[in-house]
Length: 275
Image 1 (cartoon, helix red, strand yellow):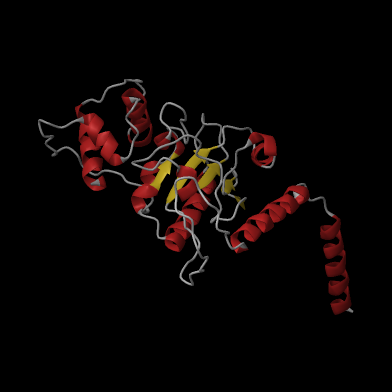
Image 2 (cartoon, helix red, strand yellow):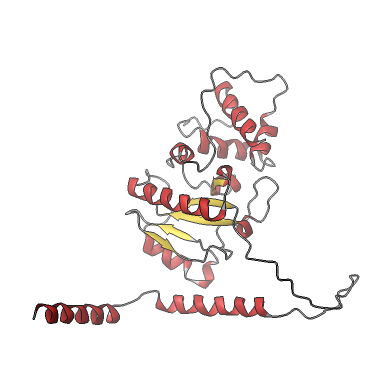
């Protein structure tokens, strides 16, 4: 009798779940359709198409030595929206033209929105080092946060677990865990100065610095050149300095657009780690 009761409860639960509303069923279906279209494109053997001024391929000879391209960077964002549901809506509306691979809610729930091998639209116009198309080589992670308040501990714990998985799965270098504001200085500020970059760096996700009190800065040291070596786009030096401070000197509330001696030592230390 007890076994029958358990079976009955299981059947009822399954029925309730099956009838429960699935708010993203429609967009999940569209995702599968788009994925099939890209799969069909990959299966197609390219035809020889003459190109003006370029040689024409005589044959299509499929090599057997290939695999999927893998991400080499992780870009961290804050959503600047009111809730995870608002972000899900934003990322499932075609007209917004914006997305990310993962969204982590305040309670620590990790939501996977796009296959890691596919190109999300999260970075926009951005540059890091010599890379000018960050979307094509990165994974985007959004944290549900308005940019004005601290991040929740459970949210950061979930992020650390996710980053550990991504780092080992794709062999991503520690220096390649950066923020949206780092790759788009002057245009973006996320994640905010509330974000615990030092905590992440201690776990191997991103660079940080140690004791800089004994550092002697060379006389020919250039802050602009050092920022460029670290990775920042220095075409707007003021924006690059602000982005650097937000990431590595978040306690600085002076809004100064120059670097003091202590900040120059931090930059020098990071430059040496980046070379």
